[in-house]
Image 1 (cartoon, rainbow, N blue to C red):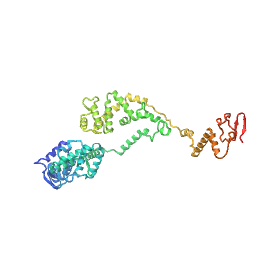
Image 2: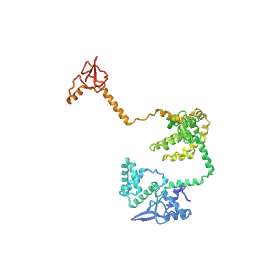
Image 3: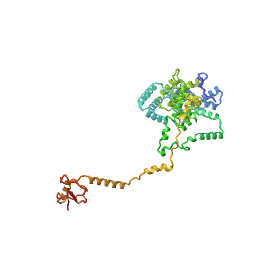
Image 4: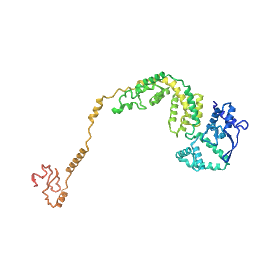
Length: 494
């Protein structure tokens, strides 16, 4: 199978194809009403590839379709299907400015300008996938959409000054570039995805097979190792806080607790990943590396994790800071990685992304796993931590003890009828203890036609304060509601 092993080989093949004497024959072709210069047909491309590499027609077609999918050749008619047709379909060589070997960063701003320009030229009639991308970018880049529209208008005005064939050719070149780098959803698979799928398939074929007995044995070993740490299979020490309301378990297993539990420390020995996944274990491992003067390895690994899972706004800044601190010449915390990994990392930092440091991070991870982790488990740092680790006792109570205190403290809630009755009794008691205004009572009785003498009163409350009417009176608790007490003498008001 013919493949492009590197960019230099691809450039060499394309330059041979464009040679005026020995390359693919090109000539002006009429497209609708416009004459397109230097157009080539699909059958000419396939015949040249078959003669040049001594391959059959199907192999030449696959190789030609790869050149179209990668963006080195673009169709003039059916621009959505990036394949070579063995007929008189017209194609052109892409200008070297748009070749993938240039490695231009594909920015969303440039794509938004392109869609805005097409929207102006087509007077708002875009294809379905272009309209969806246009709406999405308009919503996302609303803060600078005026700048995008202004750039699109300027490019559209400059394009109108060109000749029509040149304008059509440039439009086809630009559209082919964005079809490759912003493919319509569901029309075809990206060439990068095809390459990754091919690599994954090859690795799957080359992967050695494992017997089912070995796999089952590994599964049994894993279950036996983690049996005591499974929350469904083992008890919760000292007690389950959701049942007993005792938060001791949470306090002992906080991320950065000073003294961890023995079960937590034992879990660090299972694998290096378990140690790094625990913040307390990572602190202990950092102390060990500091004593061995290799703490920069763990610091670099943590920096890569922060870059990978951090915000996108600070991604470029973090990548530059990690490079200056660990990878650059004369870096204050320089790490030791091989030349090939360094080359891959430095080339990737030209266009940083979340996983640009994965190669270097994997190298440092394996270095710590194979070298530092084994010596850490035998070091005094780990032994001292294991010695100081606490082993909480089972603080769970029996079923009777669990429910007895709650049963003693539990009181049934009162009925709303009882609450209303108690409220009425409380209001009546407050009204009975409150002082009575005699003048208001007398005024009400006078309205009914009855005359009441000052010395003849019917008192309805247990205690009546009449000292403001009869200065010589004193207040007592009467035995009946139809009599009051004068000092030293009892008189019946009837």
